[in-house]
Length: 133
Image (cartoon, rainbow, N blue to C red; front, side, top):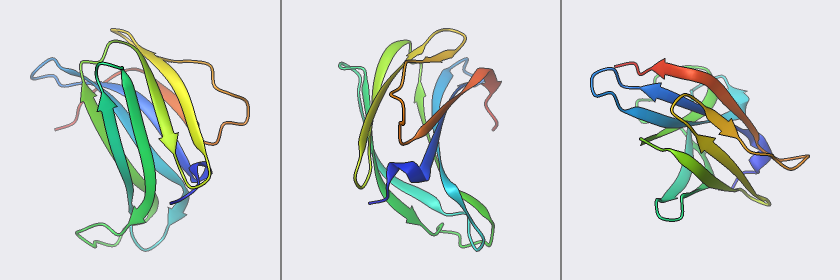
């Protein structure tokens, strides 16, 4: 299991123009750039709607199934439809666990306070992007 310091997490809202659904996107990336393949991040995810809680357990990276040469950070993107309100996120890595809160409104994601020296850099993209087909 890798250390949490090896990852970044970007939160973003995207709108599906056809259905009108607004998706909350969790985009995980490695700090490290790879030269041979753009690896995929392996993680176990769990969402408890009643508790309004997400749990992500990082388990490593693996070569993509198509094995087409590419370079860049390893990535993993997860989407959840129509979230509104406050949620808790728990991240688990090799030697650390980390928690934070965020709030989803109709127009933005607001990140709660994070402890100083947090292992994972969490960014929020402002506004709502159109979802690409």
